[in-house]
Image 1 (tube, rainbow, N blue to C red):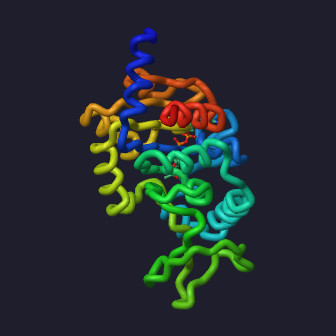
Image 2: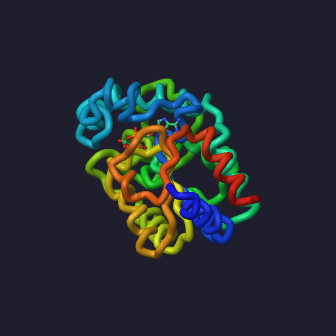
Length: 243
Ligand code: OAD
């Protein structure tokens, strides 16, 4: 990138009013939570079709729940890293929205106040039949856990083949279309419709920056690709907004 282009990006960061982060599993990797498609990715070890679809759940709810309980324990023991914390800190200076594919709740625990969970939450549990839905951080003694109504409970996550929560998706599109800067962190952008968000931002003339140690499917459409880890690059980038 030429020094003129870099200067123009830094100027745009200073002037930006609304900054939208689109985050994926990579932002939590340095908090000890595995990604899905990387070297030690979950989908390299496990078959998503046996663990993350509604058919798989009804086929063997105990197996699916055992896998989710292990992930829930890992997530609840994890701490937000410098990347999550820097995004939360930026709210002191700019209007910041976080559109996350992650289900781990680490952005909220870092202090971000406008977080939209596109794929739901592993901490929230809901009933497969009645309206019960609650945040539950303790482990279940019996798997699959039962609701008071007698039906089985499930994690409030979006499984393959299921729709995104429509209100969350609608708001996320609106924020993407109206932002000045979009920062895409730690996602392979392999999953639709979340991977459409950078194109919505571009429609509005926003600059789109990627933070990822690896090249992704849409790296060529980015205005700037920072090949570094989230915990290292986000604090540095956030400092550029404040200078
Ligand atoms: P992926 O596992 O597909 O991609 C993670 C990305 O993070 C990769 O591009 C890595 O290069 C990058 N990465 C790894 N370590 C990093 C670090 N320390 N800092 C920054 N980036 C790093 O995860 P997602 O894109 O989030 O969906 O996956 C999207 C969806 O696919 C998930 O939400 C999940 C999964 O199936 C559902 O469960 C519905």
